[in-house]
Length: 409
Ligand SMILES: [Zn+2]
Image 1 (tube, helix red, strand yellow):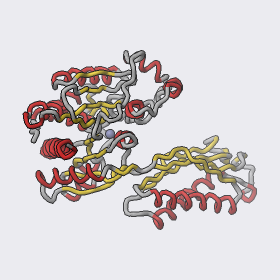
Image 2: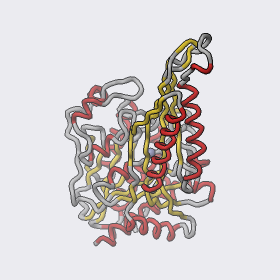
Image 3: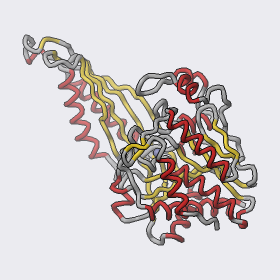
Image 4: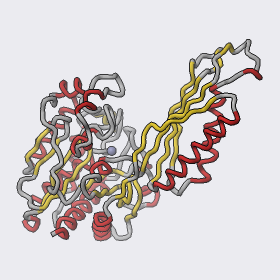
């Protein structure tokens, strides 16, 4: 069995968190100077681990393993959310690095090994999952031409140029090179933490369906327009939003979540009746039938709003990420590894957040393992996990990788 070095894992995580350190967390947007420096540092660590590192044309850092005959691809993303946590993404990258070292050090693991990936821009500073999409042939050059940064509108091409990555080839998945892809991550939710469990075995990465709902009324003077004559798009939006929040709980599964995260009214002035209002509605579940049910309900509510008047309601889909089940065999091996090291302290659960593993799962069997997030806090600089859980997770993850590589032979 490959044996991990817990203090080395913690030390490397702390070192990686120095790139863009912010309070107890990290501010490391994709292609920023600190992000580029951290990727170069990672490439150096991959080399020390006996891997052959390359930073490719989209910023992925891939540590090629030329020795192993049977390989798993293992990794996560290395940039952070703005003023985000030190473990989101980084944990999976450092675990992957530690696996490379642990396998190389164990004579019993001869011929078995991992290739390590630090994906670029899973967090969507330019576009969600850019690195893993690029690696799996799902990111066209024309898209790279078009994409701009979500904060300042910088062209992705310019950002790549500044980072020193443009002109480099993009690494692509080689069919048959891997038995599959494994990713470790903090849970980000509070399921493990509140139940006192230590390892999560991800069954499915949830689907996310999103819509833009527009209400069209009549912009007019807030003093001279009598109430009976008004077509107030703001009122129509608030009413519809309330109906959505009343209806959805009636059809929800135990883990369905929904969010109206953005609302705009035009012209958004105190003495003008809003002529137009737009809200973005999103829901997530692991079950495609549940998602269809929600979509049907949302369409019905929009139709009802149209019948009730006086404003017109329109709906258009803006995004549809389908649920991605994780490989059942990988789930069993992660669970068996968890049972060895932490009997009875593990749980199968869906991932309510998106991950690179969902993208990779279109090209190879994929599996994910979670460790607890203290208080379920993530995408915030205070995000944290107990050191014991980080160390245990690394060993369970290594055991799981070993089980998969061994049984596949
Ligand atoms: Zn993440």
